[in-house]
Image 1 (tube, rainbow, N blue to C red):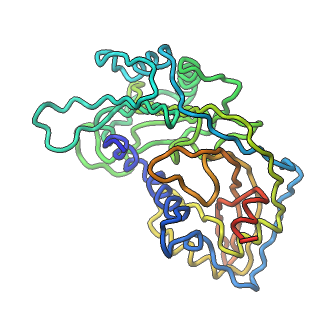
Image 2 (tube, rainbow, N blue to C red):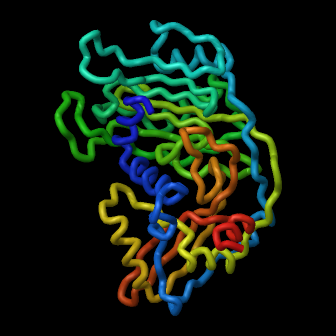
Length: 346
């Protein structure tokens, strides 16, 4: 991955940590590491209670198949170049080949040159990250209303149909350094919004800054400057419909340690928290929300290849009761009966 996008990931600590967790948990090459490392190991006597109605869930979900590389049009490419203020670098022609623009570092720069703009037809994506992304200022960041308005405008310019998008809540982005290069703590330097792609009325998981999910993500910083944006929009077609798992079947996955406890923001004691959940006297599922995500739950493509399918997952909101205290917990779980059966070896 290009250096600037690695830097971008370091600046977004939740994304980086979650990516490690998911990659380790889902990789077939992880050796002794598995989903079990990221799941609570409840006692067989611990009651797991389902308190959320499921009549709002579809009886089945479509799995979508990705179709080949996406060749972005000349208009979309041109508009993306302009959004990054990279006109002086020229405008590449539509192609199936990857395209990169590197940061200006001069001929004697020690080390690899960071990439600030990328087009990847194979991944159906475009990425831009401003130079020196890890530094910034929180002065004169536009209002949330202005950021949202600009995001919808840019998404249209990049060829997306507004009817296929759903806005997620805005999030704040932090920087490791201030505008003068001094180390900073909790330095808010941008606000971001994610316009998620919708499939059958269901959006993609996350807020756009915690995973490369489909749609358009935009971060705006000081004085309205675009700090970063990403577009991901592969061509999809319906492949097959699969029945929804029942609450009892999802609970069976929890008991079999086949779900993932999601990390909290900037959490440094994640694995301690997961381990401590085993001490819960009662575990109550309070909410289930279906989302789409690239790939298959429990698997990760190898060799940086794009996922071949887009399939649904579930985010569960739960409460762990320890007798004298409660703790809110968020989980990722399978939602298809076929995936439950695969994970449980049926």
